[in-house]
Each structure stands twice: as structure tokens, then as C-alpha cells.
Image 1 (cartoon, rainbow, N blue to C red):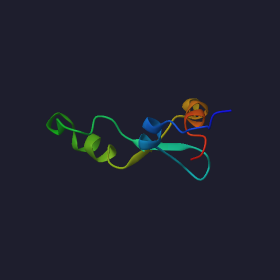
Image 2: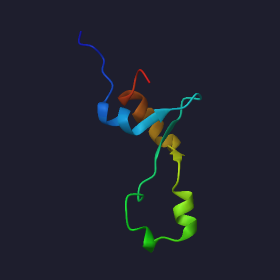
Image 3: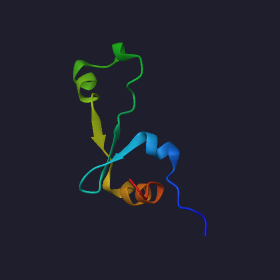
Image 4: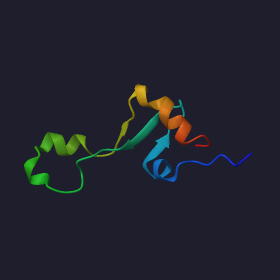
Amino acid sequence: MPKMKSNRAAAKRFKRTANGGFKSGNSFTSHRFHGKTKKQRRQLRGLSMMDKTNVKRYKKLLPFK
């Protein structure tokens, strides 16, 4: 039986939390900030939690994390 492997693309983008959820970086943060409000820019900082509906899918992609 072949080895189980983590999906490398997902491993670089998502981190598992202690409670079993996932956190990831926000989209829309690479350029063109002049078109965004200060509130939008502030809220795009840091990481955001993955929606619960996607957690099952990401657990399959990252079995060891």
C-alpha cells in the first residue's frame, strides 16, 4: 500500500488549529490597496478561520497536520 502524503499546495496555505479547524491568509491582499477602505485593509490583516463546511475536505488533504 502506498504511503499517505499531505497535499503540498494545501500544506503551504493552511494551518490546523488546536480545536481541529483551519486558518488561512486572506485573499485580495497583494496589491491595489488604494481602492480599498481603511476598514477593509485593517480587516484583511492576519489570518482568518476556514468555514466549517470546508473542514472535512481539508482534513483529507492534510491528514498529518
